[in-house]
Image (cartoon, rainbow, N blue to C red; front, side):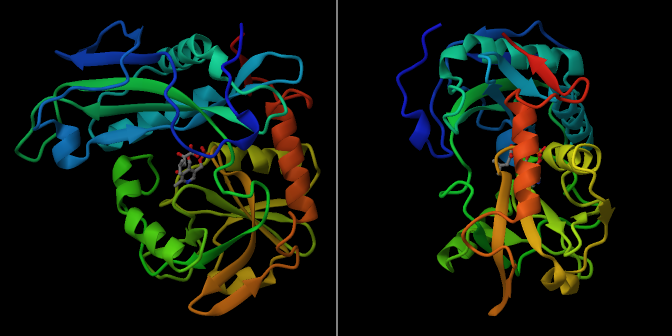
Length: 341
Ligand code: PLP
Ligand code: COI
């Protein structure tokens, strides 16, 4: 199959329309068979539940070209089950997990010409999502839903790729205790837009959100979880019921312990102790592992010993091992890699 003529090496993280997308509709209490379609546009009623009350959840995952030329996805079963959790929290009918995994494969296969070549630094980003589509004017869940998946080739989420970024502690909160911070709902991202525009205007790449109950503990950023490395090489990640359970973070913690023999801890991380860590990184599907060089809290700077030029040594090992597994040159744990073709 011939690849599209795209500038794979210089891609940003932005939308490029691809050929095929998947759509399934939920009506009268059941999902229809679903199909691949060509039209990237959606026509819906002006009063659709998603438009009025933001009843929408989504996922983010990637397809990779491996060193030996296969196209693979990474732990799609975990995206499928997280989307079920998200849907339930917003009173939406879950899309069956086996059908989710199969639909992802269909979309990747149908857009194989857009899967960036091995070694280009780009990947195919896959966006499953679902939303309430029938008219809803009283505040209640919709009765009809659409589940869709599109794919778009992307480069690094942060300009500069693996160069350390500078983030600030946000004055805004991301998620309330007992709220929706642990699911992937569009509403969590809508509320972060003002915070990220403010951070960018102040010269920062991202926000660090603290827990909104006490504002003493590290939560996550708008689109990634945190990992920290202690001066004695322990990998630490915040535990919280109000952050998204990142699949990348769960994989990194496994890799740290079982591939690299490092000690790992998932626990409360107080902002006061952040200055004592040796390395800091953001992890997620889009972020992969993006090193953080500096954190600014109202003018007070925390500069990690790993500096602003390159990743710290432990972060680099984690990055190499994780991406090595995704790109097929390090053997993956059972079930992590799904070969598409
Ligand atoms: N946290 C937030 C708020 C996110 O949007 C994402 C991206 O999906 C993550 C964390 C990372 O999750 P994952 O590694 O499953 O992509
Ligand atoms: C992802 O990593 O898939 C996300 O959804 C994060 C988003 C900020 C792009």
